[in-house]
Amino acid sequence: MSNESISRVIAAPKRRHFSVMRRNEAIAGYLFMLPLLLGIVFLTYGQFVYSLYISFTDQSVFGAANFVGFQNYVKLLTEDFFFWKSIKATLLYAFGSVIATQLTALAIALLLNSKHLHGKTFFRTVFYIPSIVPAVASCLLWMWMFNPDFGLFNAFLKALGLPTSKWIYAESSAVPSLVLMSAWACGAPMVIYLSGLANVPPSLLEAVEIDGGGVWSKFIHITIPMISPVLFYNTLMGVIGGFMTFTNSYVMTEGGPNNATLFVNYLIYRDAFQYNEFGYASALAWIVFIVLAVFTLIIFRFFGKKVYYGDRD
Amino acid sequence: MTGINLPRKRKKLRPATMILYVILLAGTAVCIVPLYWMLRSSLMSNAEIFVFPPRFFPSTWRWNNYVKTFQNFEALMYFTNTMKILVPCVIGTVLTSSMAGYALGRLRFPGKKIWFALTIGAMILPGHVVLIPLYLTYSFIGATNTYTPFYLAAWCGGGAANVFLMRQFMRTLPREYDESAMIDGASRLQIFLKILVPLCAPIMITVAIFTFMFYWNDFQGPLIYLRSDNKFTLALGILSLRGAYASKWNYIMAASLVMVVPAVLLFAIGQRYFIEGIVLTGVKG
Image (tube, rainbow over all chains, first blue to last red; front, top):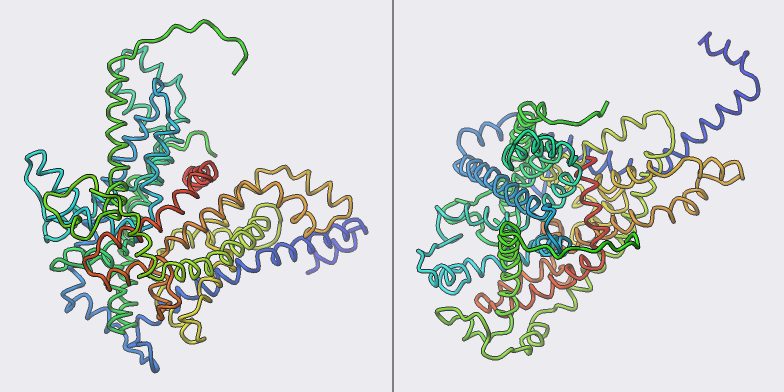
């Protein structure tokens, strides 16, 4: 306090003018971000806390909620048959789709980055188009292509004399089929890899060449470390996106066959909006959130350390 | 481009380059053939669609299927509904995210770092956790089965990722613009509207395209909030078509293509902005 009064004495009118400007700037700042502020407080973090509260109650759509302690969590972890099925299916899908999508996206980006290639923009557009197809339309299309009798895939396999598959209509092939479908729409990671590859300095690649290194050692020792930030970002976003997948299980398989594609986001939806167990579904959502947070931390710990950020301070 | 045309030797296509083109053309087929399959199925009769083995080309191209699809399926109503969500949401998102981007990117005020960190946090926060409480909140204020949940989200910043894009872009613009305008006596609102908004046109187009695509594709949101058929969006409406005509895959494919075409057209027109936006989120994020 005393410091403030001293500085006020010392402060010439100029200083006072300065502090008024500061105050005006602060008011303007808060006014400009007022909509965002309301959104962050009431639509995001407020709801986040509210969700935790609901998970400890027996909330349904109608009527008041009673506090039930850890009952929902205990029931989920010890009694719920669908919960473990769902976690298993989600992990299989999330990691399968991350690996398939990232490999496809990186492979395409590497091919498009070739200096001998003409028509790069054309190919980039073509490879992006599957990602533009709206999710529901894409699900319906793939359902139809997966049709064991009249679908494109089995017709193609038959024409080549290869064994056919039941695709999403059999328990063992359902998740791999959806993984295949996810890799079809790899446009976003692909263009991010392309921009990462464009920033790899040619001088470094030439240095390896001079030392007698081939394509593979250039890729492992230069390209991968140089694009590690985008590799990291894409993988992280892929894991989160894979965990949160919903439309494919809702539209194509309804969690089946035999719960093979009962992904957690679909199970949350089913428990909450079809079985009217909001408290229970919130507990499920929180367990999934914690599992996802743990995976994110693991990725940061083991992968994040190896990321090369150049000379960033 | 330099104006000096050096005599160029016509290079022979190396074997490696030829293999590259072959792979890329095969990849092109993988991307395009499923969409052709959608078109081909939409133009067949219901008998032809269930012929074994499947035919690659329809015997006659039945464009009339589209007329029938539009008659049986209230495409126009679903389209109008989708637009009723889309237009206000695109305007709200572009406006409020650019305002927030201005505050977070160019103004100094106490607490800015915390609010920015919370914005970044909201980007990573998985949406499924807030789905149920949001539904209960909207249900409590009587806003379910209306478009209010979409409008509120869009007019309150329109998503952390968009705010982040705006903020990153605003930071790259020289601060001298604001300062000289301040000296000329302009208010911050005037600076924002008359100087920054015109300069931010590219990023605003990017955000507008992202928002359009988001609400055009959005499925889980409408599924949860909308109950009556006359409020459904295209994404939901197509599914009710599937329920009504369990095996009329020609009509289902026609309706799906109706959803695909505007999205692909918008992408084709705004591709530059779209891809730049994706790269910006990915590289700077």
